[in-house]
Image (cartoon, rainbow, N blue to C red; front, side, top):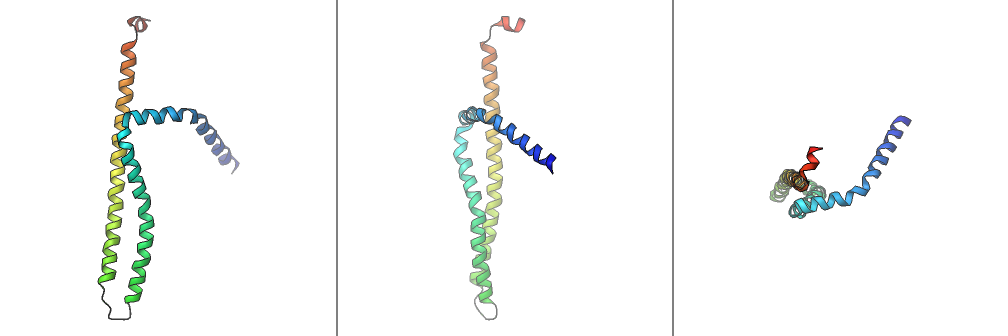
Length: 132
């Protein structure tokens, strides 16, 4: 148990050592893929709201089904809620796919931006630098 505890402490120390670089990294991402960031944040918020909506809708669906059992009640309301639940779950999958697509686009833009920065730096150096 102590070995895993020490390993965890070491990982925390390594992560904390990287914190000073975080502002520069975020600035780099903002410059390279800043237009995608609001879309990514919006999709993350929507993805976070889906489980809450699922729990709330599940409660109403179960209550509606329980109220409908034992009587010849109209089943349109529970069926509507079930269809709404299916739509909610489907939208969760669509949002998850969109988040993956946006993250891939951001990663590609950041990668291209870093390559461009390297090329600009390399072209600004004197040829004598490459000879040595």
